[in-house]
Length: 157
Image (cartoon, rainbow, N blue to C red; front, side, top):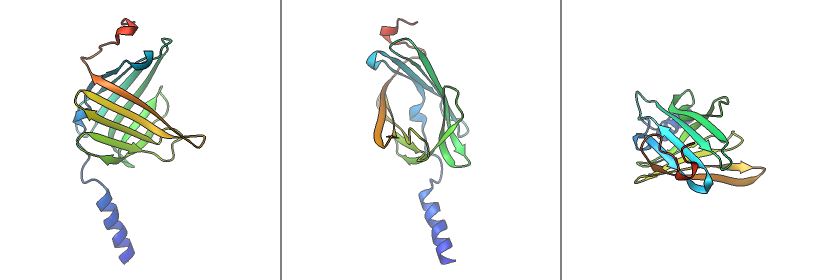
C-alpha cells in the first residue's frame, strides 16, 4: 500500500499541473534553406487545442504536407501528427519551458522526439530518433513571416 501511494505521488509530481502555454509557436513560419520551401502554420491555443499544418516543396518541386494538432489526449498532453494524411501518431509532452517544448514517442519508428524552440523571430524545429540503429535528426529554422509568404527561389509557384 505504501508503494502504491508512493508511485501515485511520483506520477503526480512528474505530470504537469496544466498544459504549457505554447502561444509562442502561433503564426506562419517559413524555412527557405537547401533549395526547398517549408512552411508551418500554427493557430493560437484555444480551449486547450492548437492546430497546425506544414507544406513542403522540395527542390524538384514535389509537394508534401502534414496536418497536426496539440491537445490533451488519453495518453496526456500531446502532439498528434498525420504526415501525408497517414493515421495519427501521438507524441506525449516530455519537456517544456517558456520557449521550448519536446514531445516523445519511443515506440514510433522515426522520429522518437519532436522539439520546438523559439528565439526571437526564429522557430527552430527538430525531429530525432534512430533508423537502423543509427541516430538521425532533421532540423528546420523557420522565420516568422506574413501569412502565405513564399521563398524567393520558388517564385510563388
